[in-house]
Image: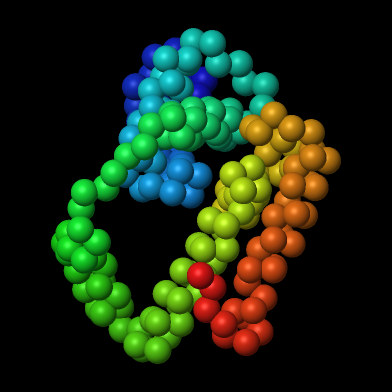
Amino acid sequence: MLRVRVDDAEAFEELMLRYQNRVVSLLAHLTGRRDMAEDLAQDVFLRIYRARKRYVPGSKFSTWLFTIAHNVASNAQRTLSRRKEVNLAAKGTDTGANSLDAAAVAASGLMPTRQLDKLELRDVVNVAVAALNDRQREAVLLNKFEHLSYEEIAEIMQLTPSAVKSLLTRARANLRDVLEPYLQQGTRVE
């Protein structure tokens, strides 16, 4: 980021390549929409580029980056709550991406039962994470998938580290409540 601050275009491209997938993934989980997450990720990197001259290396770059992503996601959620959208695409249509995903899974050589088990478990975990409130979901994603410390999450979410610890404790309890029936008895989570 120090190189970006002095207008090094290659350094900015390297930052984007290094963090783009992580930012898109986080935003997709926060907003629930992959297409929106990709657009918001562009906004995040645009904001970073615009703020490059004001960047002060006080904390880790990733903390600063995820703080910006948090703010962009919060703004998008507020905007979405004010305006209702209608999805006109039919649910059963095949966009080509689904068939590509199916071909990739089929070519992977995984046994069909294992494929189904992994897909089912992934879906159950996604449902459980989606059932968390926004703050709990964001804290879990930053902690488990981005491997950020309580202090870094606190800085991003503008909380105290003890509040983050409490938030994660409640989130884990909520996840346990949703996942336990599935893990113990195989009961499908809806």
